[in-house]
Image (tube, rainbow, N blue to C red; front, top):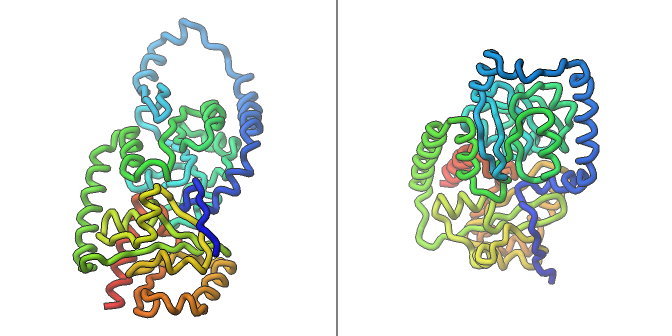
Length: 340
């Protein structure tokens, strides 16, 4: 029997981690690229004298900026009303929920994995790891940066004012969104979004009409691997919002503050509750793994399988940005309505 393997990585961005590791040697190159890309501009700009910096035009320009203390406690001078924003991070939905559409974002991987591809139209992909040249070409006046690679802060700050926000997967959704709302002066929009979301949660919860003690498990099939979700991803909605209880094995993961564990087929029944939410994607490897699992005698003997309480969801619903959370409620409501 294979024991669950502990890990510190966040399951919602599993496909990103290979790229993150591959980019560990990139910051130096990124800084060089920024230096080369900006060198020509710096060489042609005339020096500014102290007198010029105190001119009426400079005073007026100063009035269009303000100071902001970011997640790293850095005091950053930012535009009072930024027009061209680049987002370097894993959850563009945090911005989109507030009506903020960046000019560019790191979409190379997540662009095909999120639940809102329709909202990404018109946003330029700046690469993953980010390309300094691509960002510079967009002439941003503000860059928002997830706190995943501190060496990237210096490189980005050479292009435009760069604000660091809390890393997705480490900070709860609401805390992340309110950081951004504060940055853009959109706290009212954030208040309204969470008010509307709670009303929708209440409506879906009423529709589900769960009985006392109904438990749930989230199983992620990704390539050849099986993952039981712990205290992150889809479970935040199932347990934190809709009233499902964690299955016994899942509760142990949550108590241990495990985000997820990898498992073998043999131990799968130890984790399954009244309901099983199966997260999957359309890759060939995942489809083959899922088919083999569902054709096994072990799978067919699981009570939730025999009683028709397996609910299949695309793995894109395992993200926790506001747009995904909202669309996930529609998806769950539709699944249960179809089975009534």
